[in-house]
Amino acid sequence: MDRWALPGPAHFLTKAIEALREGQNLIVACPENVVVRLAETLDGRLSDDGWSVRRLRTVRDCDPLEQLFGDLELDAGESSRRSVAELCRRLRPRSVVLVDDVQNGDWPRWNRMLAEYEVASRGVSAGDRACLVVVVAGVPLANYPAKAAALSIMPWQDVVGEIDILLYVREKMRCQGALDKAGNLVARIIAKLALWDFDLIDYLVQKERRDLFEPARLMSQYAEMIVMEARFSDNWESGGRIKFDGVEWTHPLLIYRDNSRREELTTRLWAAQASEIMPLLEIHRRALCRRMRPYIKLPVVIDDQRFDDLDDIEIGPLAHVAQRAKMPSKIVQSAEKWRRLRNKLAHLEALGYLEALDRELLYPN
Image 1 (cartoon, helix red, strand yellow):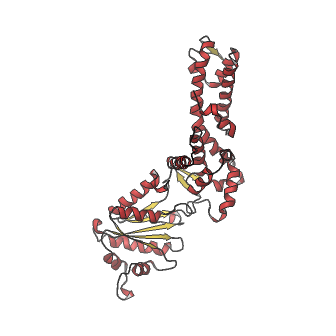
Image 2 (cartoon, helix red, strand yellow):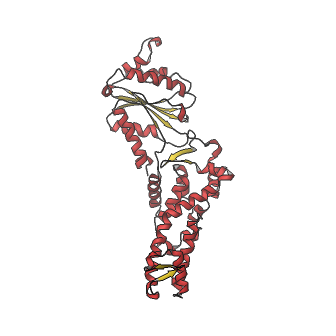
Image 3 (cartoon, one colour):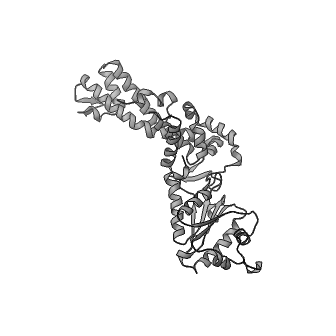
């Protein structure tokens, strides 16, 4: 599935195009190691929207103005005449110059040039402006300028959320023919473990389901495969800490690397299980009540509390009632099973592979 077709990334592209329609120059700020094919995808969307687009890749240690005049073949005569105002005048109206891969070492030069170009752009009506779009990677968020009249900053922050990841994972599983009753739980586990990292998602989707219940071991294997020390630090600019559904999360590889935090991986596994299994346990509780009714006389008194309807009784007391009333063994066993699973989840304890993917649990009547 194309990552850019997912709701979050697609909305990000839409906002960028809307800003350009309003005559805004754009700084698209990305963490390293996270966003792929952004410039290429934006180029295609802008072309489809009727824009004239020139896409350039930044030249390291080169003056931005010199690169733009040279790469765009803008004749300014003597180099002394090359200025930001002259660049703004010579660029074609309603066109976009899309500059890709500006990194930390080159950012100060581009930042200065963009500040001057923003001022020059104000002298041209919004509908006729030639806009610059600069895709920057690996620069801390604090190093970007504030929004200006003709300049917007779009950071890759809180762009991808769990709904995007679930759609992506389920489509991957569908292509593998792996969507079944356990599919929702498996997709949720992968989403909680991988968060915004699509490369990690692709890796986890290929693993055996049993492996997903040992997240620390999974992260150890993945870290060896990608040489994680070269990729992530605990900050936004490296892709190690990003907002996801409004909450700032740390990449699971960094969690694994810190021995004192590894239990957080199990907590993420638990969170995925609780999201999917707790509603199933409620369905099983109600089904258990129906099975118990022929064997019980109401009202029921539990710890001095009177219940006129079995549906009002939680699974733990229900299991006690089933045992006390000496109901058929299948009812007692089911009640005890659902009580045990719910208690584990209620106490933040992740279920094991066999417990979580139990067929009776996943296929309620």
